[in-house]
Length: 99
Image 1 (tube, rainbow, N blue to C red):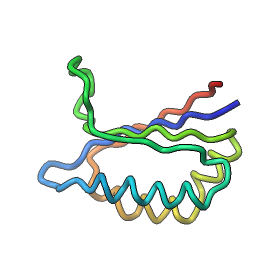
Image 2: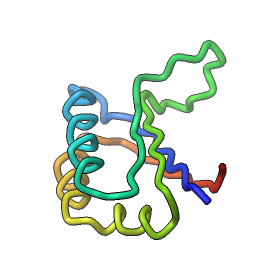
Image 3: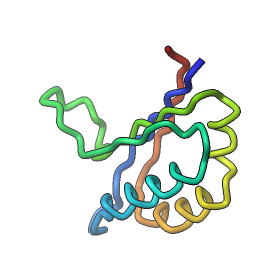
Image 4: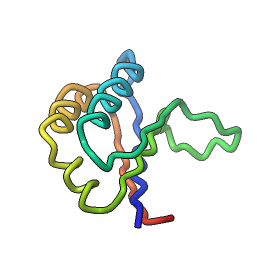
């Protein structure tokens, strides 16, 4: 069963977001982690206004939970977190299984 990993982020006030850099870093990780099938992201784009201050999001697809678990503990993922988390006011991660 595939795993869909959704990450929502909001940047600290006054911080310039580096969304393109973050997306590039995740794309590099996808290339070195077998089973990391896709990663796409972008800014909030709904007229509903239900984002609670979260301004950007990513959806990542993994072939299975074991691959997602390898992603979560991968040294490159740790580097990405260390580089980008200081700019963030909030992060939500939500995973679910699907076809």
